[in-house]
Image 1 (cartoon, rainbow, N blue to C red):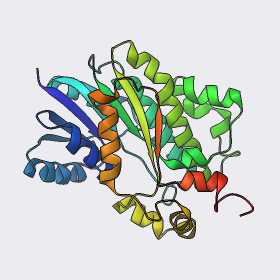
Image 2: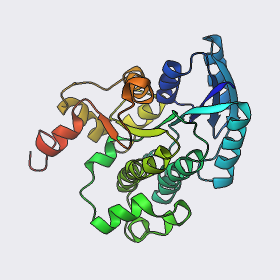
Image 3: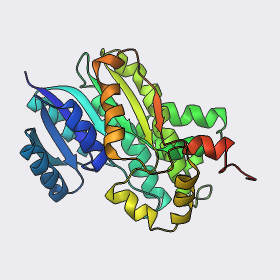
Length: 276
């Protein structure tokens, strides 16, 4: 039976990871927009990969379930790369929570029932979740373990508490990493692993919009203050993602790897820290 790598989101980081883990396997590439999926499928196909483009709306459980059914129809699902999401520059808090948090929870839930023994998953999260102040223990537990379809009803996510899109994004990404940790227990029962990677500022079409958006000065300050002194590239995240999905990382599951050039360290302890 052919091995299938499911790639959710057609962005540059998802592509970079897929290129490194999908040789000789079938790629099911899903995006909200069929045109986007087809365009990337053509590029990957021209590079020698076997790709099936399709659509998915991660904010819809039925859509994600249909994607999982399509994937199992193609072969044995040995890898899942979830990189779909929205940004705080162009989405309000309620959409951020529905796509970036609920969507991740549903993907982990649904594909946790079909992932093959020895398979692996990777969620592309964000450094933003690492810059959020500690949540109350009960909020942390709720974000990690509340059934996905009840997640958006949590008090910590309500509009009267979260009015800023950037704060919503931080909470959503913290929640995504918590979901990965909690769901890794269930994935392990199938003999599979799942991890997250939290990139910093990586040059992609999406980040270019961020860098020219309302928080552009904050992003530039991060770049200037971090150890790397520059933005990252999709290939750098792709190499880390491929390691986490591959055989050399069999001892790693339920973890979130920060790859931000040192921005978070500078935020808490360096030139970006409060009072600096």
